[in-house]
Length: 169
Image: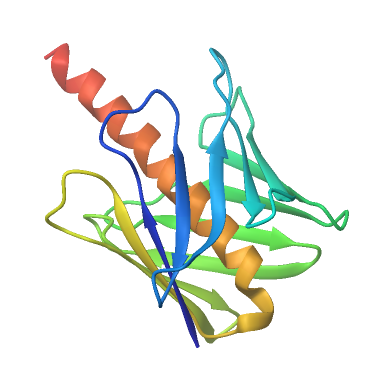
């Protein structure tokens, strides 16, 4: 079992922050590109080598993300229509994962078939988004980190859409 911590910055135009391990050591660095349309980001190791890139499908009813790993493998993350719970399906090179989340989007579990492979928890009282990712299958660590980053972006976009809808009320 391994734990990773994600903490966004308070003032930002794009997300740029370290991913820490359970000892508080910076093991990865998340770097979102500035784009007027679309979404593009990458995760780098401590040497600055890009481990994967994330992009978002621009025109779709529900959000869809693509993750391209530096070994040539590919993952798709699809938001599904659901009420009261966040539902997301993940396909990594034929490995099917799915996410289950609470209505307030603070706690998630990631499953491979009936096996829980990770927990993702958002700190409730914080000025910025802060997540703790507990990985139970260390061979899937990079995949699970990519999922966590995509879910955070998915939540951010959903929150922005809800805020925009409420401001016109």
